[in-house]
Image (cartoon, rainbow, N blue to C red):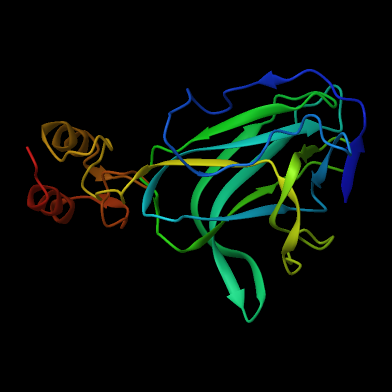
Length: 243
């Protein structure tokens, strides 16, 4: 399902999750303004999820993702979940897998057909491996007519996919109009024991681990992600110590 309007409107910018964190460009497209078709894009609703595919040409640690959204409602800010996923390829079919590497939940800022760029900052030390394909997926429980619209870029083509109307089953992806998408990261894969992601393993990371000691679901101090910050995590941190 596509939403389209030919009238070009004002450009707005929103920091959706946190302050922008600069990084190298892994993947980027044009913004949605000035294209032949005007402002348009696929609906993100309880009837359709949307995914855009990209790949990394080097190893990176993800820093942020940027997407332009507009809104089929003039008064409601619909909730949208954004996920970073691995690729699921079978033969020539490429679709988003169910393996989620990062997740963000927002209510988009746009009202009506004035696109807003939302910025999703990653602080979890997510690694992107050279040569591998990844997907950014947008999904929502919002009903049609009060839903977000993921803007297409004004120019360019990229690989994307949408779900069938049950919102669950992915159709085979293909090349077409480019979904607005910028992915940025720092060169090199993250160090698991670098809890604050500053490139070092030192007293700051040790302090963060000790403050999180005990049960700690989905936190970076839980290096082996078993739900507990304990002796194994401490030993791993000390063995990776850089000072």
